[in-house]
Image 1 (cartoon, rainbow, N blue to C red):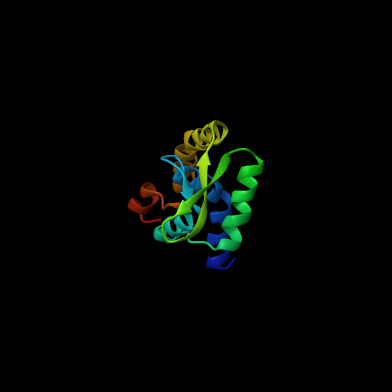
Image 2 (image 1 turned 90 degrees about the vertical axis):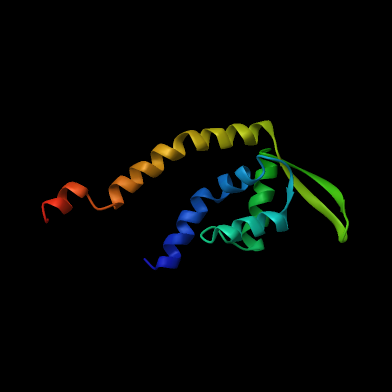
Length: 118
């Protein structure tokens, strides 16, 4: 599998929860979400990915939207986390640490084997 394809698959699995976590502290508009994801490097994605994701999160009532005037241009649609969205994020957060640790254990070299020269 190509490295880009691997990253794409990993991103698909966690992007929804990363977007929800960006909304944890308050409403944000889509361009702001894209910028924050891009700042991470590995989670950089396009509008063509984020807009359908946001629409799905809205349909599933994990986020709500509200239009607000912008000081520099047309009104912006802000996305906010709902109670259901916060619960979904909490569920994800509760399993992520153990999940990530399990993957790390499997893909990292075993120290015992390295010390014995195997």
